[in-house]
Length: 483
Ligand code: NAD
Image (cartoon, rainbow, N blue to C red; front, top):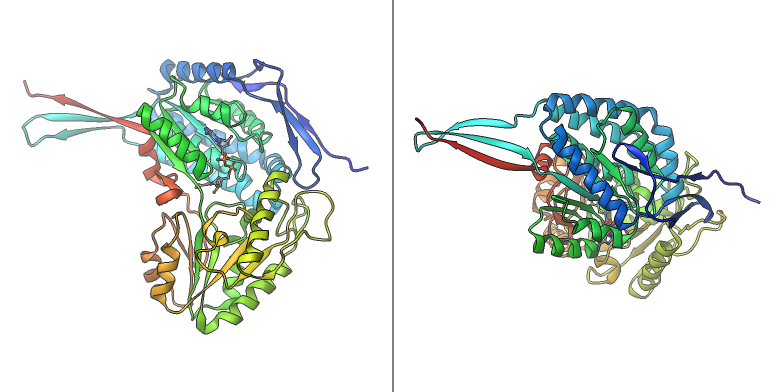
């Protein structure tokens, strides 16, 4: 019989303490590698959200909103230290829940988040919140950047710690407080983050977590005590949340789905492309919003590129996500695998399968699918237009650069992308013509210090970089007429 380490929590982290849930409902956590229960947490109810929002409001009004940015910077640095100490716990928790290969989890859910929190500490310490401006009308105006208030943060299961921290970082730097609703698919990691928050001395009520499903998320979005919504998730959910926030005139940022293009130019070095694609196109078993899953290959090198990518995908090491050698782990849930397999079945009718297409033979249990590659894909095909969110690539042939740019932009989405070339200037010229919020040349790494986000159906607003602070601030102008 397989044994399994399990973690069970009884309370929520609300108001700086471990708070009893309003109901006895629970969320069971199923391990992606095994399909077995690996833990459980209470399932949030509306009354829990009410308590969390009230605590966040008290913290905001009780001094946090007016605290000095330097004080918040010091607390953020302590938070980063406390997270760093818990990196192993965080990375294992995430990897076991959603199947993220441990090496990726160590780099992102353990490492990147620490750098992210330190980055926001640095932004806070350099923050100017008031500026006295001379008006052309002959008097002065005081322009103040004040915290927007209580933030409702909703995150998905694919990078649960990084995506939460992309909201916690700017919220705390600007003097906001936050209530986070993690996805029911990844609920164990937020308890580790909450312990780090407590150790760092983050004042009570400044960050609160209530895990739960989509109804609970909808309740948080329209809660009268929320001043701003920060959402990461699917485009479908984002549209619904955008509608509610539009009606309420509530500020909202939406980080949504993608179907990005990886444009291989005819001078690209195939070895570099294949090395880079492991992350740029397959990161987290394909469960990454900004990866390049439509591969645009020049007609002049088409067969060579199809063979090379098919060979690379077939050679990837698929296995238990906790094994440091694993390159592709299982998908996050049984339901998600069924959805991905539905796309693979459709792909077999739309295009030519050149790698994978089934379940790997060498693994037991868990929600594994083989890294899969389709060639001769039309950009109109469903596997080229819809977000699959699994290790499935579609290779599309193009005749010239004009056509490559046209195909790249012929998508509902506009989140990421890559251009591969041995001439960086040539690649940059193409990158400038691709209508997406971000794009990488010969690789794709999301920079902490630059804005990240999408256009079109990939979202509204930007996270990261100094630009991200504006979404967490309101501006007040105090006119000071002479005399
Ligand atoms: P999802 O939209 O189903 O759920 C995301 C979160 O929103 C969950 O916590 C869920 O409980 C909650 N939710 C769902 N419907 C809601 C509603 N109507 N009101 C309030 N909350 C609601 O997405 P998922 O399957 O968990 O995550 C995968 C999706 O997330 C993919 O589409 C992926 O591209 C996207 N994503 C985007 C980014 C980005 O930065 N653009 C990053 C990661 C993931």
